Each structure stands twice: as C-alpha cells, then as structure tokens.
Image 1 (cartoon, rainbow, N blue to C red):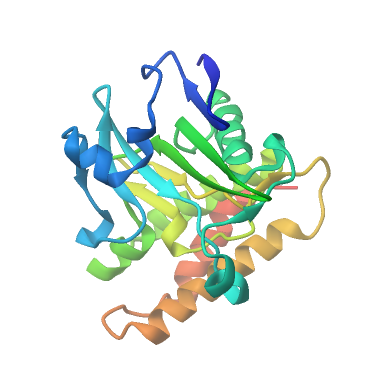
Image 2 (image 1 turned 30 degrees about the vertical axis):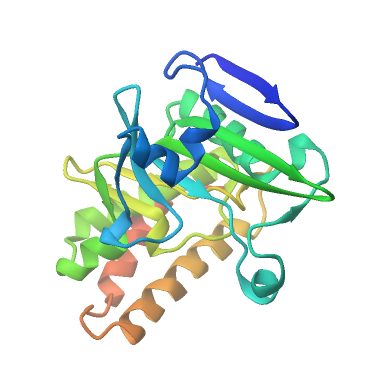
Length: 242
C-alpha cells in the first residue's frame, strides 16, 4: 500500500497509489461515475446514497457519510471540522488500511475525500467491494448452519483481539463469502482500544439486538435461534477475545 494525499482548492483526497491512479472529484460523485462508465449499480438494486463502481479494474463501493438520529434532519451529511485527522473518512481510511495490512478480515480502502464547507465538511470513502453478501441477505434466503455462525463469531473475535471496538456491529455490517470467509465492514464509528474492558460484550449484545429486530420487523426472516447464538458465541470464545 502506498498512501498518497492530494489537495485541490481546499479539498483533501487520500488514496492508495499502489492500486488506483490519482482520483479526481468524479470518483466520489455518482453522476460523474455514470458519465465515465464506472458506475455499476446500487446495493440491493436501490438508489440510496451508496453505489457500486469499478476503478482501475477493482470492484468498489462509494459511501458518502450521512448522519443518523436526531441531528440528521438538521445537518444531514455535514460534520463539524475538528482537523483532518479527526474527520470520519480520514479515520476510517487509515483504520481499514492498518487492519487490512495486518491480514485482518476487513476490506481494503481505496480513496477518501473531505470537502470543507465553512465550519463543517462533507466526506466520502471508496473501499474495495468484496464478492460477498451481508448477513441480512443470507438470512433472507434461510437459516445458516452452525459452522457459519461459528465462523462469524471467530471473525468478530479476531477483531476484538486486535482491540477493534465496532460500535455499530449489526447484521448489515457482516459480509459472508461463498468460500466461507467472513468480513466486517462500515468501521465509521469503530476505534482501536489499547486495553480490555466490557466493550467486546457490548458489541455482541448490539449484534444480537439487530438480529432480533430483523426477525421482528421482517416477517420473511426466520428467527435466529438460541442454538445459532450459541454457535456464534462458541466461535467468538475460541478466538479468546480479551
């Protein structure tokens, strides 16, 4: 990996020069991607904020940063400027770069952009798109075997061992590949912790709540059973998370 930082008219772009050429603003704009023939679709066939593309022959995902919760109607995609290193696209890009470089189960970052807007900024990130489906999509097709749940738990345990606290761990942020591989995505709110504590269990509790909510809100999904959760826990414990 060869991180490169460019700046044009106040806009900051960070990218991996080993994998893609120096990006222009069109890489971060769906309309620009469509004009250049690089736009390949949207997740779940929808037209939400994220989109699929191909850059330098690499399948990728463009994800703009958008607020949720109470401040979403007021601020939308704007965040307070607290310095470049504190900006969400910058932090997530470097976190993904570090973990992926260590061989941990996260996608590789390709590029990130920060656009200052007065006292605020807007930002986007482009990451490599893995040939996988989300845990949500997998459950839509039917129950998972115990070995799959154990693999999910083991993946989370590996990241916990490294100190990764994923504050938004849920069924949409876990990817399952056909070859049995498991990855975790959307590390926007994640951070590395230097010492153990109660956060690994809080991450797992967050995931369990998301699975229960999925079954309650989507009748097409079958319930995740106690045996499923036990298999996930067994895989997690086998990784000996601290």
